[in-house]
Picture 1: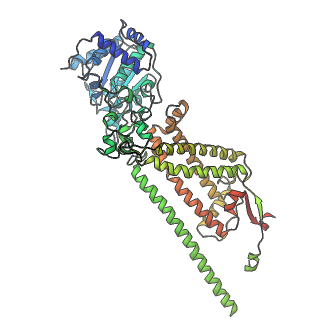
Picture 2: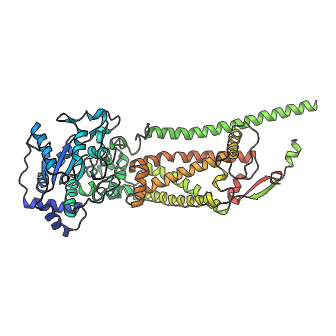
Picture 3: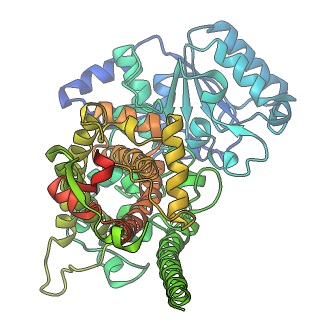
Length: 360
Length: 225
């Protein structure tokens, strides 16, 4: 059983500082953020789980940094979270109804996991009701919805081709009018806490990008702020896992790193409070914060090769098709020119014969 | 027509391509050739630098810079051509060489037949023939997509470019895949373009190749009367 110890003053301040930095606010704002999140009236947060691995909650509650989960409970009132709550069965369902009823139009809804839509959404049911129905009902009364993790934001692995359950992200069900997407597989827990802290501090939604992700976290591509960027610019690459370039920590571009096409703040925020992150550990970025990354970013260790093309086919086909088309064009030209020569030769012969006939 | 009168056929030169169009053509051609080679290197860069041996260079940075500079020249060329499509001379305007009316459509069919050796005479278009013109418009559109996907990847945080890019192409990865796929059109286009030019030049002494330098083409004097 997970134990959430009392949050120390020191940890509280540390997390507030980290969040302020994540938001890109100056140090002087730490106190503002701190007093905002400590306000007496805590906002109610209802947390729904659908089709997912619970890895998103897991990152928040990691044993390596227990204060994070505690911090969340410190700044919000969390009456319903299926993984954390003590209640079960009817009792749990009861608390959901009660929480929605009591905080109508006031609460923040956090959704984790994708929603099945095929066959009326029967592939994901809680308490005998489809997730689709639960989400629609609860979201209707929510002030704001935060989709947490790539499954909730863009459908995640459930929605990858062939998507047998018709899984979709939250935006497909409730629209984007009151939605904030905090994507990632898993997302960085600080990005969720910072989003909540922003809401509490400024009482408005943070600036969002085209995919409804907060710009403070998803405003820059990993590649453009990567600690290995200098190696890219100067042409030092790892070409296979474990080779000399890889051992020396050179750029992972040729190992299929998706940093150049992925908006996220992993390169500055990093993970697990120990400054670790995939590229730092020598693993190419998989592009997990981007829509449809299971379909579009795979195979993970190829730069562009074998990438599926919308409408069927994959890039390696395209590369072959391209080369074949180029060769085909060359061949067509040769045949065309050859045909011209043959035709001319035939015509000349016919002319010669005509002349002969005329002469005779 | 007898052989004798064919040999004594006279040709007259006439002005066809404005200097603007000729500048467009050469800017476009040279930038595309540079873009093709630098693009191939960016897709699969060679490892030329290392810390372990005395070998430092900025080859890859320079190649990328060259790609971007050539990209800007391509954009400039496209702006020129866009202007000429609507305000150029009679032969440079888009209505002259796309199959939008019966006459142009007929000329398109004629050119296809001519290229397939099904008819011995070219229809003798003064400017672009309609088949070529249609392919050029297609090339123009593909270049536009290349420019937009390229800008989207080059300026990932610039407000309007990011909004437009994500609206048209979705994610950066989709734009990158499209940028790569459309690349293949251009080498094939260049190969075909050069071949048809030479082929035409051999069959019809219109001075087609020199016209893109001098701006003048030649036509049978009877045609001009």
